[in-house]
Length: 235
Image (cartoon, rainbow, N blue to C red; front, side, top):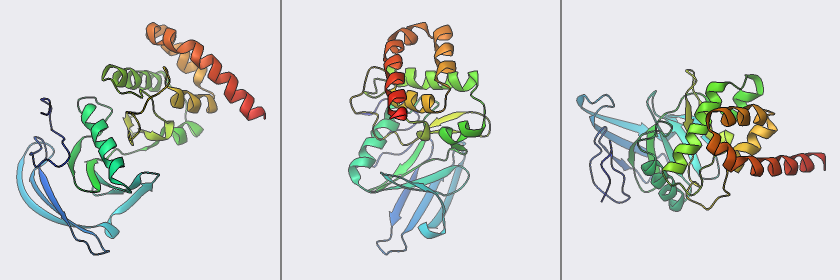
């Protein structure tokens, strides 16, 4: 039974979504047409509209190991998965993080796709090539990791490339497919990205001052990781 949340996720279920209800039927033809019937918009207003979406007419956002993402409009995007087990893992992660502000909302899903909230912006690894690492970014990153830990994700960690920073400076966690896999006792992938950007020291100082318990858990692991990253770069 699904917990009481703003929406309920259960693969294979026909349950209504409480915020945005829709039903999508896909055409098996190569052109891939999705028919989106909307009964409630994101703000909660009642509407009755039908929209045919041709995949080739959508704006392509990006592709990775698990699938391709296309922008539907300013509020929604669709991710087409290469394999159903990737969809199951990501859907389970989004369900677990449904009440956390870092995770995009899910509007609908089907056999090989999820329609979710569109996160505008650029990946944090690209952002930090030209922009300054701030205390607000540090705060959001540690809150993201600690929230995942509190929600009992097995991997409370993410790559910088899977964190989007939007124009208002808010961080979004996308592509959480592997967050239920076993993980080291600290956010290793996050720290590898921060070390490569040269901002790991600033981040750890912020954690030391504001999240001393997390600092105590992470400090010795981060020191060892720095040594390994330094050795590999020199080699």
